[in-house]
Length: 234
Image (tube, rainbow, N blue to C red; front, side, top):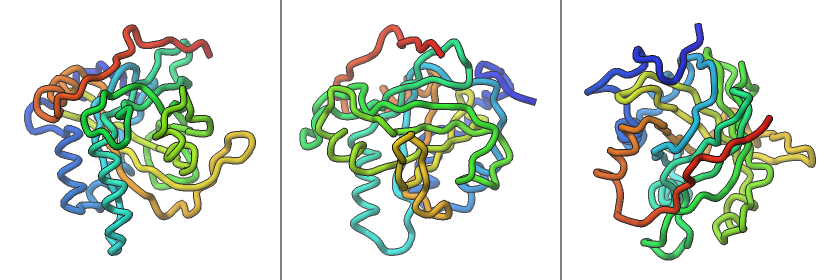
């Protein structure tokens, strides 16, 4: 069985998972619970579309304090979520990250940048224990304008995102992991170590999550919004 994103059975209401309850689990280092959610996701019939609220942070618990702080600072201060473009192929599309325009200005606006291609796959070698299908995000060619943060991070640090859906308060919420590795000339990614991730991230494309982010988890910074969401012909 594959679920549709607007399936009412995926909306649990009060007490259900949100990106912020997942973020709290991460801060409390409840890695086993997060891994269980990732390995036991819901099989979806299409990629999500639109703007998502997001949160995340480092996945280390081995005393690498500086790396932990840098990864979590990036996720919490410079990143607000992702945007998935609509597509005539429900399993292939592209998108952008909602990221702060200026790295060292804590109140600079958020803009769409750090582009990626995304696919809905039945399986992937980095996540052999996942029982559901997977959404993967490839950053082989991340530059847009480009922005400084794209040059400093997205181009120099080769990351790969994989996420699965779970039932959530507002509807499907995604539990994701990020691997470090290398892209070859054809854009194929190989993880440095498939058994080690650098971080977790959480996304929710539902309107309720975006409202909660704006009203309860925002510092008031302005944002450049893509309206309408771009369409990709695949």
